[in-house]
Image 1 (tube, helix red, strand yellow):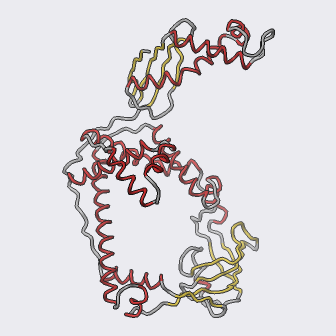
Image 2 (tube, rainbow, N blue to C red):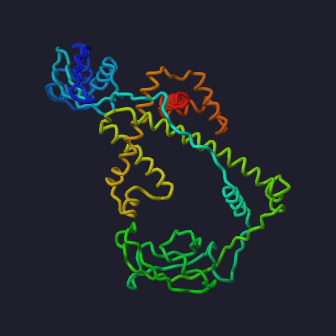
Image 3 (cartoon, rainbow, N blue to C red):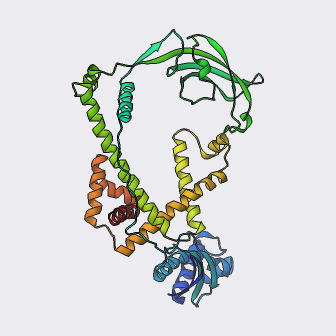
Length: 426
C-alpha cells in the first residue's frame, strides 16, 4: 500500500490510497465464493459454481462491489495510521481504479482534528477570590438544619398557610372548557414555592381543609405551552389536607438533639468551620476554572462543524437518557416545551463548541509540556473509584474496556493533571 496526502482546505485532507493488485484480487476471489453461496446458479449447487459462472450470472460490477466492501474499511484505516491523521468524521470515498489484476486505487476526503495555536498559558494573572463565611451564612445553615429536623404535622382541619404543603384536587378550564394537563388528584403543592402559575398559590392561603374554591389566574405570555400563552383560566380547587412543619427553637437543647455538641454556640462554630472548608474548595475550583478559561481564550482553533455536530448528538443523547428516567422522550419534551429538536441543537451549539475547544487546548498543552499519566497513576485513581463504588479495580477496568472508555478515562486524567499544571504556573 502507498498513501499520498494533500491538504485541500482547513481541517480537511484527501488521501489517495493505492492497494496492491494481489490484495484486491484475493478480495474478488473471496467475494465470488461468498456470492456463490447466496445465489442460485442453474446447474450448480450453492457454493459450488466457479468464479467465471458467478461473475457471468451476477455481473462484474456486483462482484467488484462486494470485493470493495470487503477491503475498503481495513485499507482506509491502514491509510489513516500511515498518514498520521486523526479523522473526526466519516470520509467521502471516491473509487479511482477498480479492476481485477490491477492496483485498487481510491481517494478519501476526510475532516481531521484541528491544530491548536496556543496563546499564553503560563504565568496567567488571575485573581483568586478569598473564601468568606458571614454570620448570615451560619444562621442560614442553622435554619436549614432546623427545617431538616422539623416535625411534620398532618392536619385534617385548619387553613392553608405559607410554607404548608397542601394536598389538592384541581381542574383547570378556559372559557369553561378543560384543557390538557390542567387536572390532577391528590397533588402536593408547597405554598410559596412558585412552582405553579403566578397567583395560584397565594389564593389558597386561608382556604380551609375540605373547602372548594375557584382560583383565577392568567397564563404568562411566555408560557411553554403555546395554546395556553396569555390565556385566562379558572381552576376549581379542593384542599384535601395539609402538611405543616413544626420547628424546634434554636437553643442548646436543639444542638444536643441534632449533634454531639452541648451548646448552640458550639454547633454554630462547627457549622462555620464546615462552611469555610466548603467555601475554600469552591474558591479553589472557581480559580481553576478561571485559569483554564483564560488559557482557552488565549488559544486559537477552528473547530470543524462535524466535531460540533457530533458533540451535540452526544449531548442530546444525554438529555434523552435523563428524560427517559421521567418517562419522557425528546419528541414529547419538544411538544411540551414548544422547542423543536433543531432549536435544542442550536441552543446546545455554543456549549458544545466551547467544550471541544477546551479539550483540544488541554490536549495541546499536555503535548507541549510532555504531560502524561503513568500506569501507576491510573491504577491509583481507579483504586479511589473502586473504594467509592465498593468494587474492585479489575471490575472497573473491565467495565471501561467493555464500553471502549479506557482511553477517554486516561485522557481525562491527563487533562486534570494539565489543569493543575496551569494553576501551578499561574
